[in-house]
Length: 249
Ligand code: OAD
Image (tube, rainbow, N blue to C red; front, top):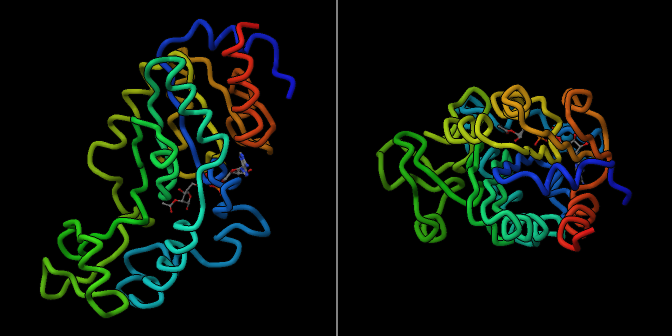
């Protein structure tokens, strides 16, 4: 794809990159986004019925079964070229923090060394009462949907993801905010930029003077403010950027 003039020059003159990603970053691996009109999870399911502590307390089995299905789907997919290009970008810059809203672990699976998971990780489980981690061996060897928690007599196993109305993992947003204030280039890839506090990060970077590069096939609330807004898929844009960045054009 044709890249806007100045984008590669800006990247060549950067040294503190930050990458923010959302569900669109995993779309080309076959993981549904949330707000895509047809296939998005929230087009099919009501988030308040599945992604809140209240829903879990009211219907633990329904919520657990839904997350089990999502886990099984995610276990079948692989990182795509875009994930791998971010690993190449990490090598190019020598450092690259990836702050993701995604719970699928695909950045780590591709080899990204430094990943902050703002909304947790769907493959991990915690105790609904104490928040303490529960090993997958316990989950796989104890009946019940969900299994009881080994950490509390009234606790149940639940996915280690952030539900609506819940706090983000300790320190995650602090690290992300510090990186947004310090970066000189900030990518915002595959996010509708609607869910706070993650959606504030590219604007924090922008106000701190960073070059903001958005990658999304459709415009978002960030598009007009971003230095560069590439209306393309993650794989397409990152492949083109790395091809230009690394061949000295
Ligand atoms: P959304 O589903 O809101 O937005 C996904 C964005 O990715 C949309 O703007 C799409 O246009 C774009 N997109 C789709 N395919 C793409 C591709 N191949 N390449 C690049 N972009 C693509 O997902 P998020 O912004 O991640 O939170 O949603 C934020 C949070 O809302 C999620 O983490 C989840 C959800 O509720 C919690 O559950 C706490």
